Length: 117
Image 1: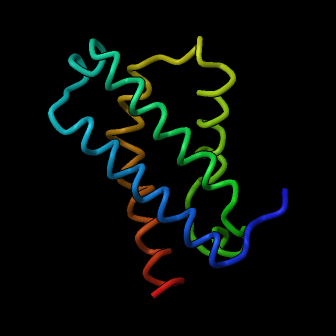
Image 2 (image 1 turned 90 degrees about the horizontal axis):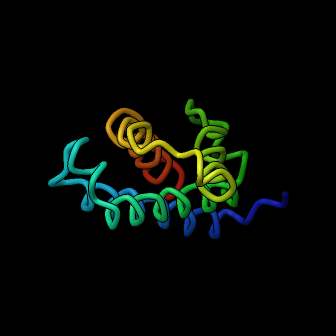
C-alpha cells in the first residue's frame, strides 16, 4: 500500500488523536460492567477504533518504524471490527481501552511532538 506524504501522515495522526480523545470521553463514566451493557457506547468506541486502524494504514512507515509500538495490532483490530465483528467480545474491547489505549496515546503524542513540532 502506498503511504501518504508527511503532511498527510500528520493529518492522519491528528485523526487518531481525535479518535482516542473521543474514546476516552465515551468511556469516562463507564466501568467494565456498564460498558458491557451500553450498546451505544460500544458502537461509538468500535467506530473510533476503526478510524484509528484505518488512519494508521496511511501513515508513512518511515515515521512509525522509529517508535516501538505494535502497529500491526492497531491495523489488525480495525480488520477484526470490520470483518469479524460477530466474534468481538466486549470484555476484550474494554481491556484494550484500559490497557492498550494509554500506550498508543503516549506513542502518538511522541510522534506528533518529535516529527511535527
